[in-house]
Length: 470
Ligand SMILES: *[C@@H]1O[C@H](CO)[C@@H](O)[C@H](O)[C@H]1NC(C)=O
Image (cartoon, rainbow, N blue to C red):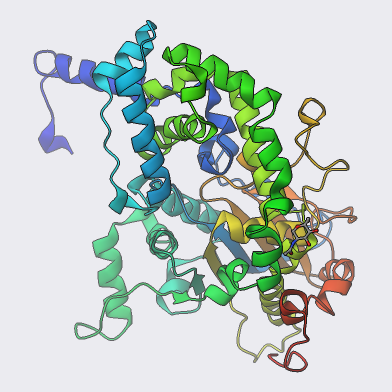
């Protein structure tokens, strides 16, 4: 550090100015940034992001220590998928050729913004997304030093499972990088692994096991794919809202800001412009000129449209959606059962942590199955105005790097379980403590623990016999 000291004044002046300029202009976050639905950054959903012991809430009067952590985590920030990149192309062509508004920000769009997305980026994890996972791992290792330690990782005691998608596998790697003490880089990490695994000859590798049956159950459940995903009637509310009065209003206002006839800006292109603002922020941390097209009320309407889509496609809208996550549900509870079993002092210690990396499409059905974020009145195309206080807001629930944490404690009266979502405590439906006894949680989900048969629900026939995996 000291060797690179620069004399005061002189050289330092312009450098500092440049730095300040960078800081000011790249850190300014658009007002609409907390309405991006599943394209919201984690920092908007959870602004505190400090590893604070106060979120861990075993009962005060009882001696408890954490013995296991199961974490279901969504991949971090990513590039748009190829389909969205094609839409962005169509939007930018339209704006380049036809937009004639006079607003200064529109001029900036014309003169300073260049299309830089290419189809080969197709949904891959970006550097910011790697950082999302590294930082999350670091905070969790501060919260659970005995569970998520570098030592436990190096000695192969952690289980890491991932969806086969590139962005998830990369996220699984970044999470492991983050578990390094002091945040050493990838090279030091790989060297450490190489040594732990038997010296120079051994391949340096991250630990992960691809498991799409667990992490991409949604595409394997026929009842879900046919009954919901590919069924226009099942997603009718979304279609209605897309062409309804609120969305038409947004379309008119945005077209006007662009100086375009409203009919030229189709609902798909309107959505592409909104996503473009979100991508520029979540990928490059910049306040893009595309953001000026939307005010906060427009953003709320667009957020509602994507919440409607997630609700009817990935959540409580249809019971089969939650049930399609039965394999993951059973896997999680089997892991917790094992970790909470009484042990003699001579028994091997339980697995300290199970890390499961997937998608928003993985988390939402599981959270629905657990009975979370279920408002009394379902969101529909007709009740936008009465839904402002809804709990089902995907911007809060499934931003990039969203996580469901289940912490099992060893306590005097028996094992207890606490749930956190995006690092904030959340209670199990119907239970009054932050960390109820594990057997009370099991009682709450008895009907699912005894049933929730993937084959019966998804294929309409029972599985090949009793569940004998334990
Ligand atoms: C499509 O969805 C509707 C409404 O949820 C439902 O009644 C219908 O049975 C579904 N169609 C198929 C093929 O599953």
